Structures are given as structure tokens and as C-alpha cells.
Picture 1 (cartoon, rainbow, N blue to C red):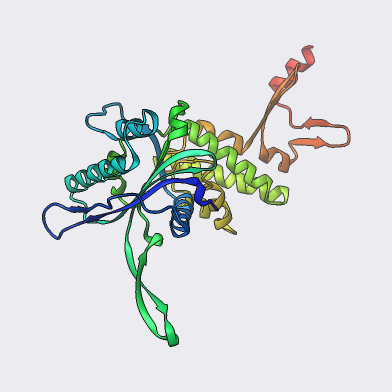
Picture 2: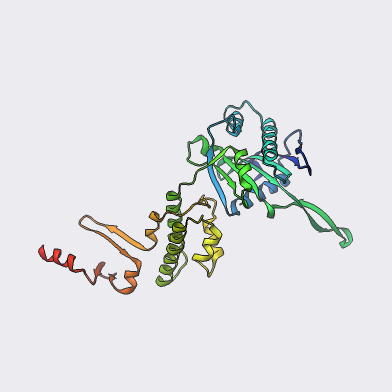
Length: 335
């Protein structure tokens, strides 16, 4: 992802300091950071890491704005125009501090808040960034320690798509789920209620897997095996109630190159949620063909093509069914 500096409307860094005991403290920057090349590179890295990180949750604003003030803050800033960005960022950090202290979260760090246009969408980003110690080579090839932001350890970040929110979209908040219940307090800070409709997400997953199989230049047998393996894995998860983990599923379904499938499933444009239990009702297209015309309807398993029970002749564009059951044979003979 490459974004120009013009895509960033505002960006500011505040600091949240977590004490060993007691409440945290906040170091506020008095004004926005300059929107210069370093700020643009920082924002580009955040957007890229956020897009590539697996395990995101999606949702919309909670309706109780007294308990969850984020929708009011965003509306006053982005819709009403009654709150400037500097005030918005201070209100957000204060609210973040309250949530962090309430849940006794150990992490502090640098709080990045930015409003930027990403792929044509007006978005508000917030992330809690940690610092780590790196190494740089100085004058005379000397070795020095140098602290820097550790994007590889990014665990707390969210994005509010203001454009989608104003357009009445079903989901417009995305956040990293992190490990364990890490996302719980941050999700409450965002004022987000999860919107994961298992049936809808499973249909989206099935369509993505089918498209992936079509684009991998696989032999027919290999393609069918991939989709049948996907059906088996997802059906077992549906029966056991196991939550979907995109990376784990990719390694089971496409073990020869799991990173290729994982990259497809985690494509930000797909907005595929993780953590839902696959709905078995949506899995049939992975192993079953279904079609109809004016005078007939037909449904058969992919395995029927390999066994010869169903035969398709490309030259004549005809489909031949073998081993017709007696009950159907009798009906046909009566015609």
C-alpha cells in the first residue's frame, strides 16, 4: 500500500504511560504532528501492518453513547464539525486511558490517532504502538542502540470507516483481535459491538475458496481435492463449534503453499472476519454442483465426475447420468 501525504488529513502522537502500580498518566502533544514524509511513512506502515495482520474483528457502534462515547466524538468531529481534530484526539486518549485503567491493562505506549483517506474511504485510525531497541551503524561504522516503533508487535489498533458509517453500511469498524482477551477493552474503547453473521461470512469464505481454486492452475483432480478438503475442515469446525482461524485453516486446506491461501483470505478488501464458527448450511457448494434450466434442475457431487456417475461431453454440450435409480427409471418409463 502506498499513500501520498495528501491522503492524511491529520495525525498526532500522544503517549500513555503505565505505572507499575496505580493509574496511568498521559503525555499529550499540544498540536497535530506535521504531515511530512516521516509521518506519511509512519502512516503507510500502520495501514500495511493493519491490513496484513490476521485475526481482525468487525462491527458497528454501540447505541448507548453515554457508556460508549466514541460515536458521539466521531460525529461531532467528522459530521457536525463542532470538534476539531486536536480536541478529538485528547478526548479519545482520555477515554482510552479510562478503559485501560478499568481493565488493569499493563501496556502503555505511543497512541497514534490519524484521519486519512484510504482507497477513497475517509477513515479514523487509532493504534497503541510499542517501542523496541534496535541497532544502527553510525559514523566510522560504529554500532549504536536506537529505539524505534515496533510494528511487528502491533496488537492494539482499530479503524473506523467514516464513509461507510455515513452510508449506512452494516460494518464500518475493524480492530485487531490480538491474543486472548486483549481486544476486549480496546473494543469497548471503540464503542464497537461485534457483527459476525456466521452464515454470511461462511458464504463469503466458500466463494473465496472456490475463486482461489480456479486461479491456481490446478489439475481438475487437485482442484476438487482442495475444495473437498476445505469442506471437510470447515464441516468439522461447524460440528465441534471451533472458531475460525484464517492461518490455521489455510495450512489445513492448502498445505503445499498455505501462505498463498492465507494471503488471499486476509486480503483487506475481502473484510473476512475470523473467530466465527462456520455455518454448515453454506458449505455445500464446495462439493456440490447445482444448476437449472427452463425444463430441469440438477444437483450432484463433484465426486460423481471422477467416478463416472456423471459425465460431461464438451463437444456435444451434454451431461450423461449413469446408474439411474429404479424409482427414477420407473417415473421416466411412465412418460
